[in-house]
Image 1 (cartoon, rainbow, N blue to C red):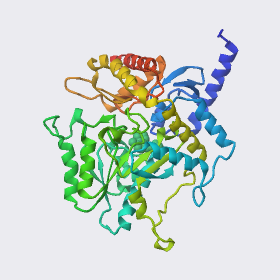
Image 2: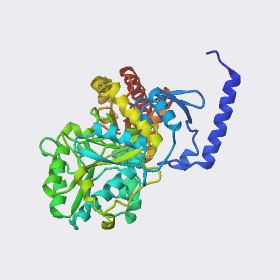
Image 3: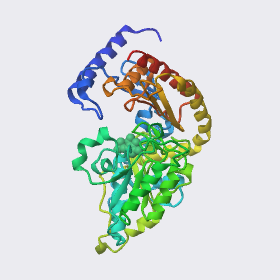
Image 4: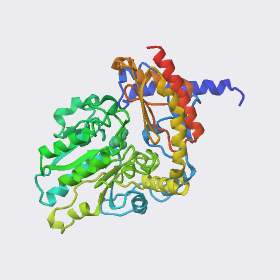
Length: 462
Ligand code: PLP
């Protein structure tokens, strides 16, 4: 298109008005607002496929799937149509005392793809609420069965399950969670399976997964008291894409079985194809007792989450009205029809487009593109499972010496990436790539090219 100075000036004026209003009124999540207000933000105005478009007309690859949730890209005709059709009927109705077409169809679709044996869907609207619900269900399940001492939870250091008080209690990221400690209920945390910086100072294969033994020791120290082990299967996302050693998840399942506890798997980040299988637990043949999903459930379109349980757990809550066995929990927007319609359309697309069949090719393309970066002097480790990638930046590769917190090494990479046409969001010194499943092999190579150049530029200047 020929340049249009008048349109550019109008776009710039609109952008500046929005920046001023953002700086005046908004409080962004996980953001030091003092720094934010000193910088000019990118304001996303629209999206198209795997690209985001800002108020000045710049296009960016959506390198982190709009915070790990977008699956098929943006403005997908089938999902747009499903939401529009639903809007033509009703935007919201409650699940408290009423049923709705959209929530029923969505639950049916979901049960078709989760591991067999998971049969009951409790909807909510965020990963954090899905975790809260899992904790409360696990606790109440044992109370109702008369196993009254089973009221403790075990979790893994470095875990992340959301930001409400219950989900923070089972979380284990010091930077985010330490300040709230006095507000949390006690949870027994076991060491993290972080092989690059093993907290036990050991290494595979010689350690024979000593970190898994540590989890079991927690159970042994509290016999008959653990209601559930809560973890992110295969990859701890928010702590920097910590990929678990093969067999770890299966060991967790065995420990829970030996000690009569429930296994709660949080697939809010890993679910819906992200790790190369529809759900991460499939890769180790594990069926959790409770599965939580959110983010990609609605294709990343609308807030929707689900806590999915076995029939056995569900049965604990059955009884006459006066038994008071009811699960007294719910949210106003539980099972919102618009979100459910988007989710149903997204899950149908996963199936109809054969999305999972294309994953091995995409994984290979991503792995091949990343390979040359392994040798970079400021890359300590590249962790990848499926399309989830963490590139850990280090000051010194030989000593694994970290960049100081205040240097914001990861953030610098994302600023460089913006200039080159990709949106990334780091986790401390870990550069995260979490592309939508819809990215082509070509898109993935382009994303890695931008990431590599951005890492070179950022680490070259600190
Ligand atoms: N669980 C996991 C594994 C996550 O990665 C996240 C978010 O990143 C959450 C839970 C929280 O989800 P939400 O932000 O929707 O509350």
